[in-house]
Image (cartoon, rainbow, N blue to C red; front, side):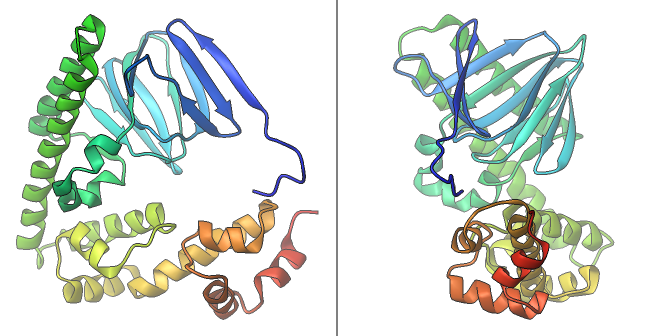
Length: 300
């Protein structure tokens, strides 16, 4: 973002056991000494405005519900459910009267860099909402409550012990996902195809800014590339590559209108590898250049 010489203001809010530091929409999560995990418990009605951070955020309601909005999609997370939000996803939350929840935040590098984590990369970078899956919910919540207990006691090397539970959590999530993916593959000719294609479309909407490929999205659905390409076009109405580029151009157009970012920064932020490619694709879709589009539609 161009700052025209003015630095963004950093704010600091005091909480009973730490600080919440904000710079614009970015939150800098603070941790206790010798740790990279933070746990917050609250029974107080509260609303956090839209923000993002480098930590993974896990919401574990224990009473009532917590309303989350993540990338314009809403979740009403109930007391037997779990929502896991990956790093750098914009989100907000609201907790009503009579509700209670644990909020776990942790830096993910120690887990995500494990060699076999690339086998489940598809679920590391998207929100995971455990609902209507009793086996998975019970298993994951049990591990998370062990983290709560460990955090409260703070015995020697508690941070490492908590991370061991987090590693188990992702391993189990990967196993649950693999079983589900295999069932998806077996059901290629069933009536579940429209639902899976809609899930694929949502995946693209949430990850368009990344270097996602046909390999990535077909693996996400559990289909072969050939089958996925055919079914995506049949169900969504356009080819995968066309949908992805239209999504990127659409988001770039919003930034051209409503932000003061440079065109090069916008191109990179929506997933284009070069300004030349961005200019060409934008012109193909919008029938004008990015600079011409901003001149016509940009905020005055």
